Length: 267
Ligand code: NAP
Image 1 (spheres, protein in one colour):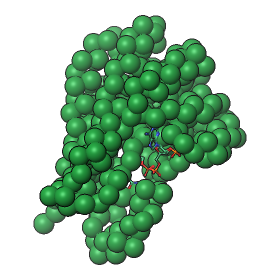
Image 2: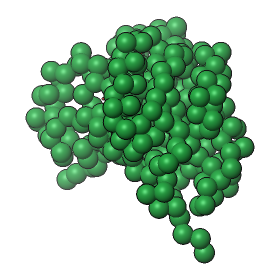
Image 3: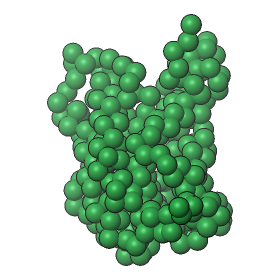
Image 4: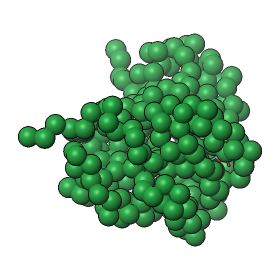
């Protein structure tokens, strides 16, 4: 029986594509990969300054990077992103579907506007589904490593995949859909040498949660999460590093809860 590739041999040629890599959780992921010596395609939507800053940080950490603009909610942008990623990297060993937006308006589901719903679903659900489809088709063509791995895919969902927030219904629906997207691709791609994981962050300190900081400060202090602190982008980065190193070779379709224990029911 062939042993799985060890952590130390998995970092030499590796290329990652991280959507929404410019800020927040995505930046934490890019930095972790940089520390492992990876080459990282840092995708962003509009904030080029933040993306360039992230590229520099990845290089300073010991990796290499380029910034590629592209709206994950737009098919033509996804196609261009994939072309540019493979042209620069020669291959993609890890796709991280991280880019996402919060509800355009936090409104009761009884008042949900259809155009807002459509845009959120395009970016947060349809985009990752079709980007995963496009990248996995190219991964299948890549030569496998010693353990038979052709690539790995991570989908960043949320505790909102199962926790209902009636004023962010579109967001919750998209994240629940990502959970099934993970299961579907994990089942389809396993025999082709591609493993797929879902990372479910809890409450993480980023620009996205900035506007609701006071609310979550109080909830966390009141015991919402067993580990009483905000999560940091580096917490997600460290989980990604475990995947990137190949430390989960006999798992696929797995959910990694990085949430301070929020998902547990306690009595
Ligand atoms: P953030 O601070 O708002 O950063 C969002 C990132 O996504 C930025 O890099 C942004 O690019 C990019 N982006 C936004 N729309 C995009 C689009 N249409 N196409 C491509 N890139 C796009 O958000 P975050 O908190 O880091 O969240 C990252 C992911 O984690 C999201 O999927 C979010 O749902 C999920 N999540 C977050 C939390 C949390 O508590 N923060 C919890 C659970 C899950 P620009 O810099 O160009 O704007």
